[in-house]
Amino acid sequence: MFSKLKNIFKSLSKQLSNAVMYKIIDERNIEEFCSKILIDLIEADVAYDVAEGIVESIRRNLVGQRIPRGVNTEEYMNEILYKSLYDILSKGLASDFLNVVRDIVARDGVAKIMFMGINGVGKTTTIAKIAYMLKQNGVRSVVVAADTFRAGAQEQLRKHCEKLGLPFIGGRYGADPAAVAFDGVAYAQRGKYNVVLIDTAGRMHIDVDLMNELKKIVNVVKPHMKILIVDALTGNDAIEQARKFDEAIGVDGVILTKVDADASGGAALSVIIGVGKPILYLGVGQSYDDLLRYEPDAILKMLLR
Ligand SMILES: Nc1nc2c(ncn2[C@@H]2O[C@H](COP(=O)(O)OP(=O)(O)O)[C@@H](O)[C@H]2O)c(=O)[nH]1
Ligand SMILES: [Mg+2]
Image (tube, rainbow, N blue to C red; front, side, top):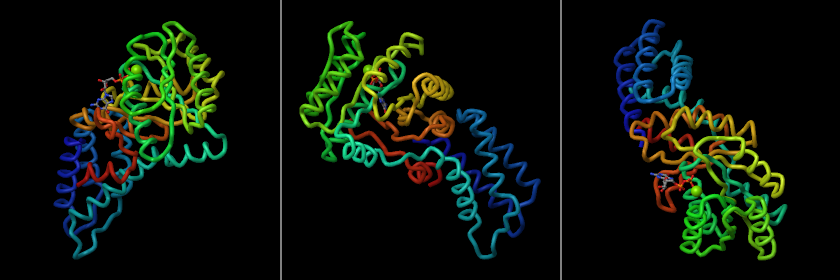
């Protein structure tokens, strides 16, 4: 993961350290490197605004730096890059999901969590991963397929639930998704389950019908958390989806899927930085345990090692 970006940052810290051996880093050095890294990042599919933000942060951290004698300059530069990126990546840091869920359960009995996103981003797969993670941590969940539009959607989720040994609540084709979600919540309350995970319908595009359907589920079920799933490979589109879902429904947190499939890492990094919402997890594969908690340090280890 992030292989191309890793090479860019590695060569940057090498070049910087060669240039600044035994002297102060001057304006000219900085300008030269900043314009080069901007181009490198854009060539690695990093969105323009995001690349500019990264360069700006590096510039801020470089200005006036004096490398102490006897210090390994490459390591020193690597630390400056680390700090520059950490400043940016830490903006996406979310509270620990599991703790948040446990707090809600302690207060309200059942935590209601709704997942949204357009078709194919990985909603159903991610819900199965979350259900698995909760089960591993002793939290009992009910899974609801409030997508009554596609028969396949119900089947897919039912199979995951069978594998995971979790109760599945579905609805007949064409049934009201809000009613199905409501049934799921009632089932959880009766059966003393801790969490209800609600899968919703996707569309190819964001349209009024989808938003109205989601609004109705929100009004009926009153979820504690509305989580948006976006596909890392779609870069700027994912950022745009987050903006639209947030305006229409409200987004409490984001899960970024298919980070493993982004060869350069630029699109994934762009979404992480540009999405403007807390990032709960990264999807890094198709198995149940391919779900990474979002931690800037872990990303930085991948980027700067
Ligand atoms: N490589 C990879 N594939 C994923 C990931 N998450 C989901 N997928 C795949 O993306 C496709 C669509 O997933 P699905 O859960 O059906 O999407 P939905 O339409 O949003 O419910 C499936 O083939 C999943 O296996 C991920 O993190 N990495
Ligand atoms: Mg689905």
